[in-house]
Length: 325
Image (tube, rainbow, N blue to C red; front, top):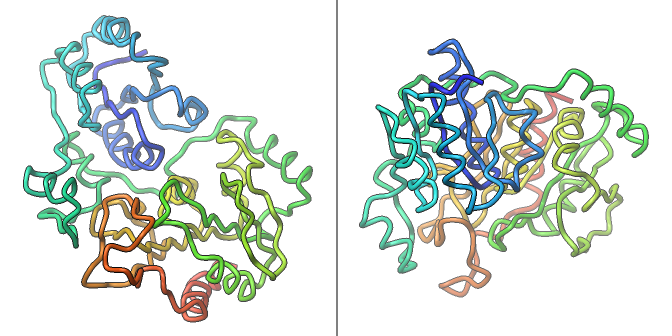
């Protein structure tokens, strides 16, 4: 395994996927895959990432990981996490060149911690561009950012047959998210289902069944992270909340409509650019009120960011997606 250039990003899924243009840029610039060091939670993504992936199973393995990486005599380390553990690993590797990603300046960090809103960044560029800049490369943004194992397509077709799904004959909707301010309202999901010309599959990790009268295929909690790229790749399109699966949909190259509610693309977490992407986000004077959509209650008591015109949103999304269907 070549180890001349090392990228460190332990979490989360969306952030790891936002490193892909930088990883591809490093490979093009240096003629070899970089090493990506990430966390054990993302083991299932390892076969799909355009890098030689090293998994840190637990924090106590940090010293062993550093020793293993140092044996490759790396030329550079790019630390993209900004946490104590990742900074420690970068320091222990002690490559001739070490570059550190700076998320926010002190003023912006204080603003986020103190929950002063709306949160405005001095550098609103997408995170994937900032990652590539830290790595000293031009970001590469092909239609598909992932790589696929040789037998993966055959495995996916068997899974689709088991689920009674036809390739390119269904729309995937991922309405869920890890933070409450990102979750798509049931009323919007229902309008999307009613507007869709194809059967709709609702997917994602959630124990809450959507309160929707329209017919849909319920595949919540049904797919492993290893299976998800194939299920997405064979969808006619994906409609998603601001979430890790949103970034995964972009990475497999499927047409994507991404809906930002409490969060805002101006914070840098929009999907990697593509002509197949539509990003919807209403401009509001109070938005965003949190970095990652963590407010379950509106600080001003109105939650205007979640009061979307469902029919207008559905029309706008399918006016964009119709050309791919």
